[in-house]
Length: 116
Length: 151
Image 1 (spheres, rainbow over the protein chains, first blue to last red):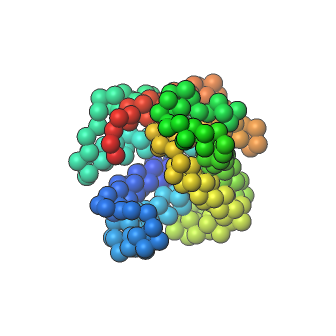
Image 2 (image 1 turned 60 degrees about the vertical axis):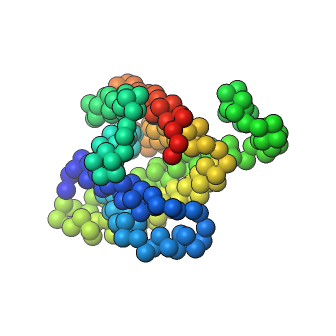
Image 3 (image 1 turned 90 degrees about the vertical axis):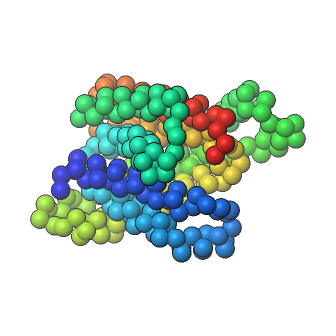
């Protein structure tokens, strides 16, 4: 597995993890020891944990042979991926101003991407 | 420096008593900055750990490579530092609105790139610095788009 494909896989898995976590905690979560334990009953929270661990592992594969000053800021393309996934799977609405911000981030990511 | 983080706009939003308590203990500001510093250091240390571990050869399966990396002392240390940064972050978030705190995390991109350049000897071309600046600007915009949103 090449470093770049590990990086993309890590970013996509990490973004999915965020969607799963939101799905798992969206309904009536209030912080407290009991409620954290209750989260263990949620299949979504488990999906988040598994994705998170694998995303971290793939991230380590990526940076083992990549510059960290290159790979790390590329992670911010996750903002775009999470936005798209949240529309599709969580039915979230995204304001025009937020799309504008995400477009700016994506422009920055493309500049970083070309600086390999 | 710590006082500078409370903008006039922020102070305007606070109740009188709250302003006093913020001035008395600016712990949350240090917690937020500490979280960002620890998060950045954590990633740099993970990088040191996995670089030291080597590529492990293309023949190895992804799972065994991941397992191998998770057992590297420097990578483990980096993960632990990153986790302690997250704990500080949770404290900071409990004290201040996420919409104020979140743009600060964009600092991580600069700190990691600086660490890559000065600690790890990476060559960082001008285009990459420009890209990082654009991303940071975008993250700040993202947060201003969240103002006035309920959840």
